[in-house]
Length: 254
Image (tube, rainbow, N blue to C red; front, side, top):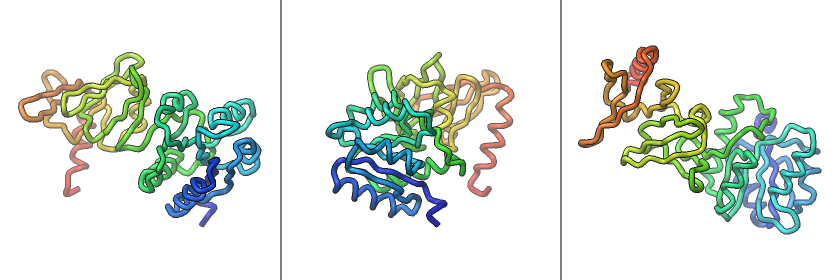
């Protein structure tokens, strides 16, 4: 039923692109297009009129950019929809962080990628679709994440992440290859957007349980092994039993 679906609005200056995205959204079965326009100047009025759950917003448009539309929205007292930028230009990803977008979709938009965005919205809102999109950073889904890195935008494939450590206002992603990526995000914010295979072992570490080999009780560390390489991440003593129960509950027979 439509009232259970995500109410989406599209602002896209190219009619063909608008029709394509509208069709993709409806085809997911998760959303209905409550409003759309090819004229960015009327976007704010339509948002106020239709109060969509999610706003799919092109960035580069004649007369008024997607960022300018959000600047105007910020002067109005309203519950902002979740913002999803849609663009063919990946150089806007960093600026999208400053506007606290929920997601950032590159054109041509992949149907599976779009569906993952809608599913993450449903999971995040947990049935309470009251907006608060202004507080959501740009993330893709539980598999692929986008962060502001030290030198630019960093794309994280979480399947390759062994563990994550806190470093003040930064978080370090340690990959199975041995590579380390540092992003400007608190570890608590990172944790909110990880899949169920990740486990918080203490204040400063999150592990990917897929790679866990053993728990070193003497040094209070989780141990990961690949070939002749060994990786270690600390674990708080009161987290050991919780982690063991977690691992048991995820055995194939359970």
